[in-house]
Length: 394
Image (cartoon, rainbow, N blue to C red; front, side):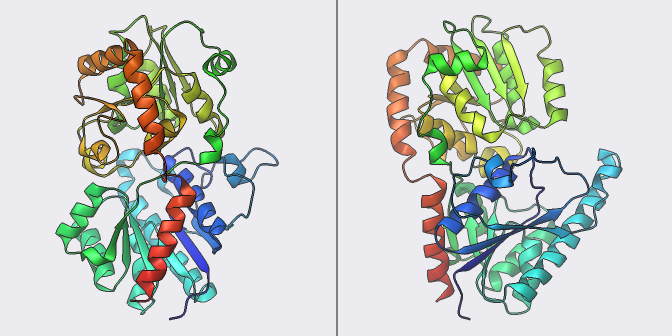
């Protein structure tokens, strides 16, 4: 099969969305387009979507720099997930996934017969592979536990899909599942370099955010799902009343839950979701950043590739992080301070230790910026398209 310079990205996600996966899809797709591949994004037409501000497209919303834009197309699916209580959402979610995957595969087959297919979900890739489609790639964020999904993932590999592992932990599990090493490449998440090219100085960032200029500031940016460990961070904050904690990000329900937990802590500020282009402002305002992931579940300890890590490295914000394989995969003692996960006292001690040591902070800043080299979305996309092109010619 001869491939045109075209990529279809298939992702079962809302656009826009407050979840990091949507940002990752948008940035990955825009980077493919900048590599010279005509790119189309097929995403789920969900029943409930937060509208974009007037006059703002999804790329501007996610901080994508000016330049060529992929086509964005919403694909219909059966979606009544949000119409039932959370405890009953398992089967509606499976129905939504399957109907989106079926419809997206039909669009690809009918309208993009020569394109590379870059799918985040096995369900979308498998119908195409079963019909003999070549040039199909699956970005794997974790190896599923369920028997059916594991079998489908292995079938994708047996039908010669290329697999992009988002972390070393995912790679190890794919190999254990039976995926051949030559079908695999590891590509962690990345960051948008232009968003961090002209950061304000700390004083200006704090003034903009309404933070005191003369207190130590610990910053967390990102999602607030329980496995992210932000509740551990709030408990650690109780032990450091002299430190200002600023937490930005999260879905509305998670923000509400965390604000209840932090009630009465005047030095803990929970700002909720902020537009992606504002994240750099929070990082510029901090003395120390934090990634307090929990040791369970496996998505936290083995698989995740946090966007916030690469953004912090690029911005020069020294990090205190949980000592987990997923974070050791991209960080070392030269780029972060590691602490025992799930332990508020250990986290508080690590934060205090780094806040009290400007030499160590400067060391981490220098080495972190160096480690960020090559982690931006454009460089990642160039590696990926080169690998996909070579793989498709085997």
